[in-house]
Image 1 (cartoon, rainbow, N blue to C red):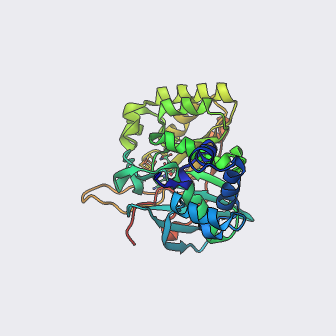
Image 2 (image 1 turned 60 degrees about the vertical axis):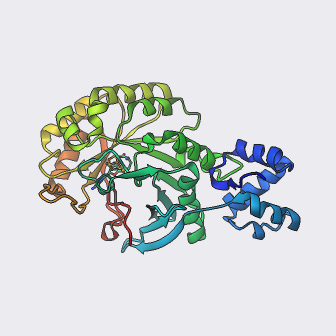
Image 3 (image 1 turned 90 degrees about the vertical axis):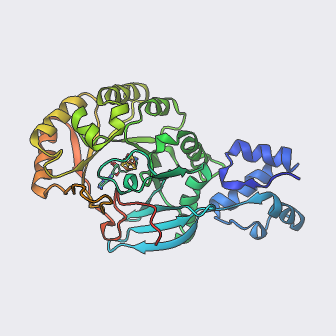
Length: 348
Ligand code: SAH
Ligand code: SF4
């Protein structure tokens, strides 16, 4: 007997291959199954009424459709929702659903924890357990759509984890979400955020689906960046900027830069001048993110603080004066620890 297949991990080509070769079914059956899962969010084979009873009974044993299980859902004063999911092996991850007017954006995780340990990020502080599979990444999105009873408009890979340390599964999850026969989510509605894993930025430049790229900069020189983001010791600022230039030349796409505002750490006027200099000519759009407080795990660790509104405004004004377009990001979901950098593998 064949091993049963994990449905959410299948690309469209794998659906066809499995349906035709393993189950001896015509190709259109693969399309029907994808429609049930990705359009109708039906995860129970017994409810797939355009399949014959015999086929349903056979597929129940051959096909596992396992979206993550919700163990907790919180709703913020501003309407942001945070979901805590349990995976098949008991590991837990979080996703966030943000609404802006009638539109919604899902912020999804790519790893259980994150090994990169940025000093300002709760995910980094919670350590790293494992990568998520493509199906576990897509599953967060589908499970949120099913729970909300509506389609979600955008997805950002800005939850737990560094997407480019799990690029094979992350790229596969994008193909699944984007495929016309599957979720059919437009490339312009998908954003990857990276802390600066250079080889994968270059790989993204060659990826056939033109998703958006967001890069977490957070410091305008190597000394400070390496202190805040250990990934900079491996991929220096110079190599990162070169990769962004190559990406821009190849794709013509506008890159977003994320910069978390830390009081008296990276928010001095000189930092804004340095930043404008390294980003000059790249045509980026900068998001200034007021730092969201996180719980410190190690005793004696020095706490970081959010820059004052005046300092953030002054920083923004200097960048603008030097031709770097920017905006100050409105915080969302801080009261339920759902804001940027606040996600972790909590138990409750
Ligand atoms: N690992 C990827 C994506 C997840 S983090 C990355 O680092 O880009 C998503 C964004 O939240 C990043 O820009 C990250 O730097 C930012 N962030 C992390 N901790 C934060 C905090 N405490 N306050 C505000 N933003 C934070
Ligand atoms: Fe990892 Fe991103 Fe958090 Fe850094 S900011 S520890 S790369 S999730």
